[in-house]
Image (cartoon, rainbow, N blue to C red):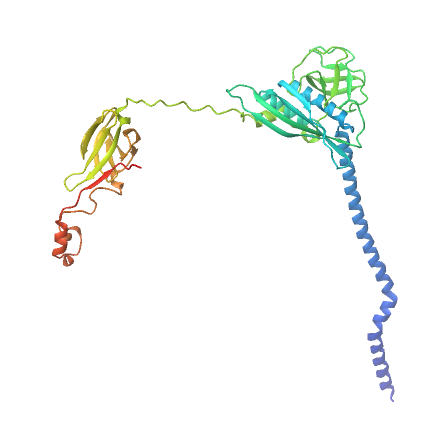
Length: 420
């Protein structure tokens, strides 16, 4: 074998070995590296999923902590008592009269973690007072809602509304026990009407940063600056009025929901500018004048004849029958005009420049504007005493039979008021 052939054989064997053995070699050398890359990708995906679940868990924990802060006390009986007191104070502050706030029987529940307590509210209030109550109710940072609301309008315009309402609050079992619904303290000194600052005995449970709203008797004030137990306030907010408050008067926090901070009472009043519970004033009763001749006179019948159509107007009070023709002037009561057309089921009367149509069975007060030219029931339509060729037909087709028909008399057409 020559050298050239040996080299060619070696080259061929090397090519075959490389083509068949390279994958095996790659699998032996790089297989572990591919496995490691796949494991890294799987771990990264698991880490991303774990981070997402952790993030969602943090959101739920934050939401749960927020619910616990807004919850009623965990013991249902105590929670219902405090909630009843708070609703009563708010209703009295709104000015609801004949007020009756009663607790509903506690309901058993199989859902762990929370309990609902309900209170019924009945009373009388103006629309403005009801608006104020609902505005402050929904602004309060509590886990509660209006479960049912029934408002009965006043029998007379301007009277009070009759209100029946069911409100419901939640008490979470993990909420901290407390003897009052919101943080409370007392005034260290009296607060005259002209003062815009106050001093409290303790500020431990209150927010450390202003602004926040406090409740002193029936007045709401906004704390704008804090210096220990001395607060600078904005008096009479949310539609309340300034009042004198004696020393040791109770000061209670009125927490506002975050999403309600920018909603003012004026905004709600503008949105509810129109009173939705006022019964509409009924229209005045129209007294019918029984002595009105035009109301007493009806069109009873029309007769369409070859000679001249006629119509009959009948007065039900005087029992007088008036026969009218085309061109007849009528004057019945304050209705004056001229009959310009007598049709199958009506007549037309011209009054001034207007045409009025009176249908059979209708009185003169029930006339409607009409047009004699647009009538579909104009009398004697298509009838003529002239031969057929005089009406635009083909004279070649006009035999003696057609001429005989054209000279025959047409029967009178009598139309009366329809009766059941």
